[in-house]
Length: 136
Image 1 (cartoon, rainbow, N blue to C red):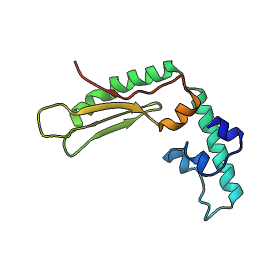
Image 2: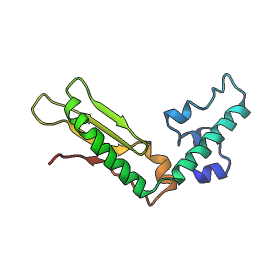
Image 3: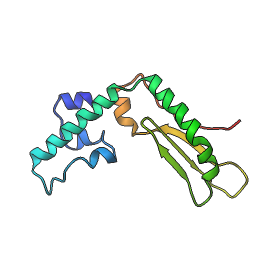
Image 4: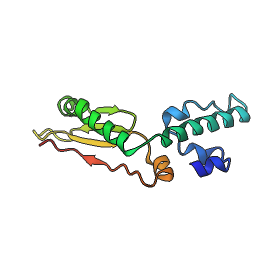
């Protein structure tokens, strides 16, 4: 993303890094002029780059600990065939679902809170693996 921003890339190539919250900040081209849309895209990209620059492994680890400490039990107990559980923090997303009516516990997943393309493109040293969480 940083390379695309520095090359003053606009439109679809820059938007691929944005998630729903960032896309909501971009005005519609049908309502606003092209310059306003491009300015909003550029500003949103700069905010995203700032956020990415603040990510550290320690912050991710702390977020994982907090997420498991505060939301694991709720995910495990509130999930049934009709209802899943989802909670998203700054860096981590915890979700659970139950796929059958057996007494097996629901499956609980810990994944990155945002799409991986922006993180992988800019921060090759930080990996967000998907974990399948087991309670011992």
